[in-house]
Image 1 (cartoon, rainbow, N blue to C red):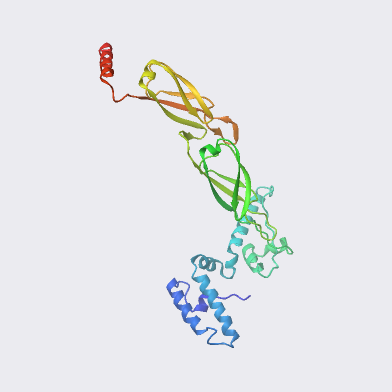
Image 2: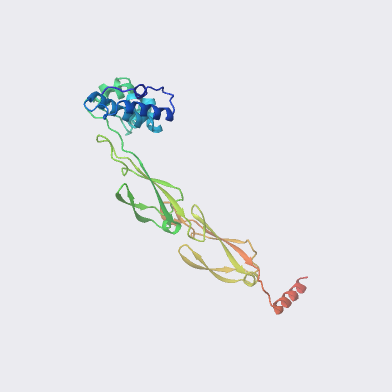
Length: 305
């Protein structure tokens, strides 16, 4: 197919604004409309070309590709992928071999791609694979998955729907908020037998617990009544895997902290290994004292002074 200069077809400069493109298209479309030339095949072809020119130049993304790659603008993504593959291959070669990395192969006799790849590789690519179609890795797919913090305390199976396909995979214990994992080969289909793309899943972890999490360690502040803090005693608190009893020493101060070893969160990909839980005591001062209570505190105050 011969190359069509869309700017020349519409009679405008490359610097034309969107408004100028729209105005030029309307003018030319009226002139070559099939209704005015019912038996003129050339006019109908011209009208179709005008529609193509307007579709490309009125779309900023398509116009940018067209300006950058000319007649090969529709293969711009393949161009970039192949260029990156070539760059990686050259780097691997300089390092002493491909070492299992991606290698580019292509059919450079194909009418659609021959000039395109010859321009990109300087014509040398013809000798590398004259009878093979160009292969490209499929598009990578990005997905987000929202979970509660309690969901990732232990490993679990999850099913996600990506482009109409249900994919079942394991979520490792201890995954972090905004962490991304790659599932190889679950992206878009490759081109001409190329490998499939990969699936990237980013986790959004909502903290539905009473704990503050820092990697595998957990933090929590516990209110303790004044009398237990002064005299000592036993309290029961919640952890991620159940309740535990703690013994407070007499005269426990507000802000005192204790560490419960191994009672924190799961370590990433190590379901049976846990961080620590740090408990901070906050002494609660009683309110709405009765007259008798006030008198007793006054007695204590006299004794302390």
